[in-house]
Length: 282
Ligand code: NAP
Image (cartoon, rainbow, N blue to C red; front, side, top):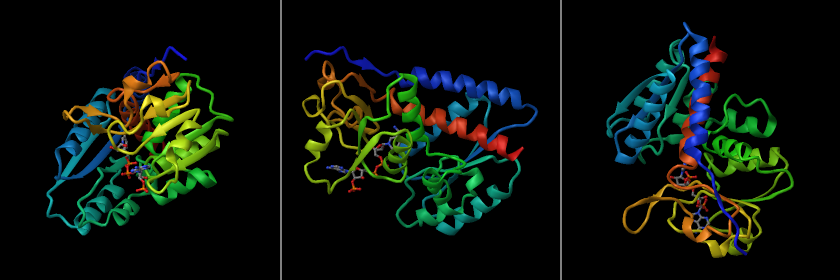
């Protein structure tokens, strides 16, 4: 079978969403939209992610403020800062760049963010909202994946979706979003027995593992939609995803590249959530 595989251009779709956000921010003037980002100086990749978010905020007119704490900071230092930001009228969204250093209590820190400012959608209240309804903010990466599928008019209802990875920020919320759209969802993880069999059944395969070339073309179902969430590096140190992109060409119907697939959509959804937060706070 030789299928013409369509590359889903996340950068292009994200730029359409960013333009919509820019228009919405302009329409809110003289009210402003403010995002505060808390980061603990650890590794350089986190700093790159933050720079990208800051650049995107500048582009759409969101006022971003970065708080960089040094590595010796404590959980309490972060909690104190969050308390100030929760009370500030000029702050609509608060984001803590993960992962935090091991000595910090990540779940206590995330729980301290006011749910109405939790633009990453990581709080228990917002995650529970995906099950029970009423969530203020949904997690940006899964939201971005849903937007990619919808933009390409990919049918979700009745499709078998296999997600590899069960994190609270990608796999679990994405499973609920797909289920809410009437997909049949299977979540796999490191203890899944016979992962290869599960992967072969996927009409829509989403990989969020973080291992280079974890998925190859020989493993996927012909005409599958392949969404690569992973951000990792290959043996030459080059940025790549979980999927061996070239080996899926001619087999997958759709595929997202890394870079330029899910990543830009995550940032676009963060911007969208910030505007929503500001609208809720007016
Ligand atoms: P995570 O918390 O590290 O979770 C990784 C998941 O992969 C876990 O559920 C783990 O299973 C599973 N896994 C590991 N080895 C496996 C194996 N051999 N077979 C099956 N499953 C396996 O990761 P995350 O935070 O969700 O992120 C996943 C990847 O996506 C990373 O590369 C990250 O950088 C990237 N990411 C990208 C974006 C974006 O915007 N593009 C956003 C977020 C994350 P267990 O639960 O059993 O350990």
